[in-house]
Length: 190
Image 1 (cartoon, rainbow, N blue to C red):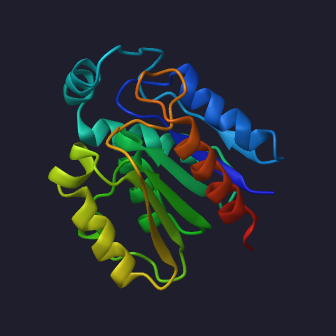
Image 2: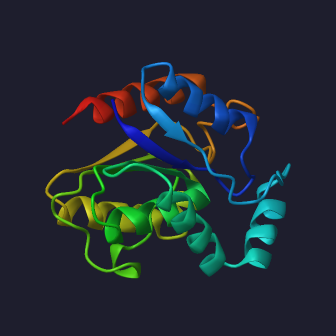
Image 3: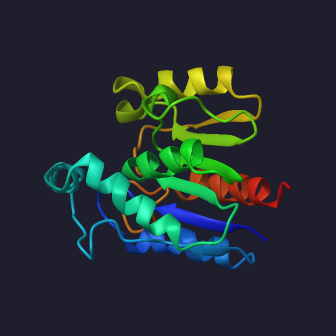
């Protein structure tokens, strides 16, 4: 079974993010869900992003690195939207990464240096999610798939950004079930 470090999105460590982590635990995986917001959660993406701006990207990345320091070697990093930043940085820069699952977002790999060829990555988003398509994430995801030998981009029907959080109105049960199934398959891969 895999050790997983799962980073929440800009609304914080919501019950829906915790539920996704619990679903992975239900299949025997050890899942760590650090709270990058020190217990704060937000009702809107704008409010959550305003708080993340107040904390600062560098501090979000530092909090992610501190969380990774306490987990066993060879983790799989999972990030939801804002959480993709620390997940992707750790997958690219921390030795021993077993893989990365980037959900709702992807940044150009050049932000953190070259992607390690031996680290597989899976990217998941809705095909008409304007945050993903209009802010450069889709382009970054396609470039990463072209560059990394074991990379896949999975696009789901719909236009919601945070579709995998069961505590939000944007939740899509069918897409999340497929995301969970694909993630479990990825975690079983040696």
